[in-house]
Image (cartoon, rainbow, N blue to C red):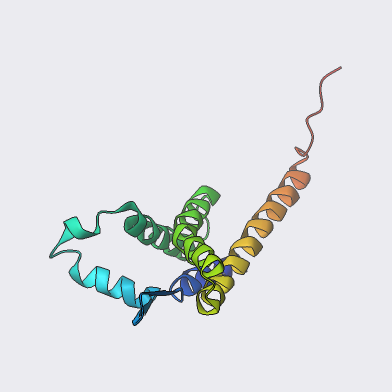
Length: 139
């Protein structure tokens, strides 16, 4: 189940919708394709953290999907790097108001929260099984 949540995070991160100006709009998968096509020709145009961190987050989540025994911090780092741009889209959609932007960011946000809560639950269950939920002081 964990692997499917990770895959859903990557898929829903690509469905973010951006629009600016009067006739300018794009999905994140279109923007990412443009970036990947021209990053090797003009890398200085894409060295902004707001561009590199979500790409790095996608790579980390894909690694976590392919290797499920990876540490949780890799998943969390990838999720929060991707959340930068998705939560920015959600924020702009709320203050603009743009229902298209809000709806495009909502699936990622829901899966993000679900995955965090599942990780917390799994950690609690693991601690209970090992008996290390509470520290018992020696008498």
